[in-house]
Amino acid sequence: MKQYQAYPYTANEATGHFKFQSVGKRGTIDKAIELAQMAPGIYNLALLDFDPVTQDYVDDSITDNGDMPEVLATVLAVVLDHLSQFPKSNIIITGNSRSRNRLYQIAINKIGDDVKRQLIILGYQHARWRVFEPNQSYESFLIARK
Image (cartoon, one colour):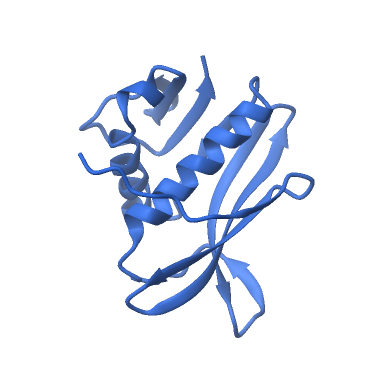
């Protein structure tokens, strides 16, 4: 399987924002990954696009820039960096639609075995957390260090 290169990003751990640029068929798009603390040690991950009209980052746009593997590699890089700095934290990822959740599930399926061995990956299904398995449909995902 081809390994995709993550985009370079700037991190602001104090605010939980990680900014980068998506470069693809629609040009350069400013993006951000936000890790918002929900409770001590629990963070919600949001993948955001900069909206030039509102001058804010939003989570409901579809950019279709043709570089989703690189964007998802960047999300994984941010997750791994965060877990390295805060090894006891848990990151929860919930898409804003079924298709976005499916996209996250595909990305999790493609994480290399060497990285998966370092992580606990759970999926939320039928009102409980379960060990992540491919070909299952989940409402949310939880990633933590072993």
